[in-house]
Image 1: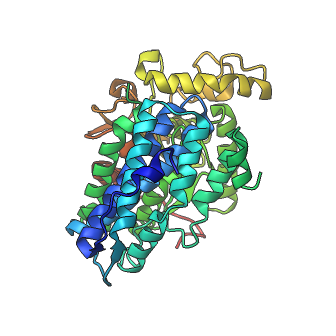
Image 2: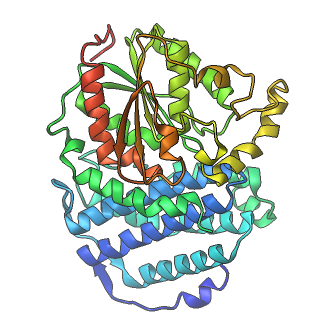
Length: 179
Length: 249
């Protein structure tokens, strides 16, 4: 988790987020993560492998955001929610604060280790589980819309582990991925 | 200074949202393919993953799309071109028939390289936001140049003969032929945007090719509904008379 994040994560929203509200908040989360990864891609453009990795991550998170937003606003014909969705408000609020904090730090300047750590934390957060739940509660997969549907959630993590093995110098982070 | 990806990110999301809602994405009002083969080549810093949505769309339209085999397009273009030559040979062995090659950004130059060197296999080239004229360094965003230059020492370790790797003065086969006049029988369509902040649109104009202007940013070209419409029209007009061979659906 980003430094100072634990303390800020008490922004309480105990309500359960249902359906449209859950979709709207989740779409914004995915968009914000995509922007964070785009910022990393630009920041570390002098390390082309890292820039390419974060470019991919940014575009895929952006795609998640667009699909969830389309479910929310009904802008794409045929796509529909097929089951009710509920997210715990407190967890969503914590994630929102975590991402905003990461973005603030990223704009101020972060090291490769810090950027990889933030990515590791976000990829191990509830966000991917929420997205999978949205896919399971909609006809997006049936329509073939997600091009990056990854039922085991392993593809991003495999790429991330590769990047950490190649570029991280922080021993704690390297140990976390089994290096 | 906001970098090129963060700057173009909102446009990418907007283009994707518009594409998904557009009839062209569902194939409405678009001429269907007849199993003709289309090879897709990603841009610098991207991989085949970036063109999966276009590949799926082409397949639904009735074309037969093939990916390049490039995970990360960050190698010396000449080395990548050699990889693509192998891919072309593989597809020729599979008898997929004459190919249309679509490339985004640097991928468009690599597509042009294939068209220039392998006219028996390549029928048409479609370049999306590609710097077809690199006579001026101002034609491409300086941060892209910087990233490209950083890879040069690594490439030169692989082949010290190519001292000017990544420039038009390099003596490699890619630099010598990617910008050469295309042989007869190979045509080119360049699709570009005047709002492109990465590649100067004037560098995307091919005096010998068909040039189509669309709106939107550089990265968003791969999910741009105007591009999809232009690609569908181009395929319909240039590839309709191309017969797919045995493996076509």
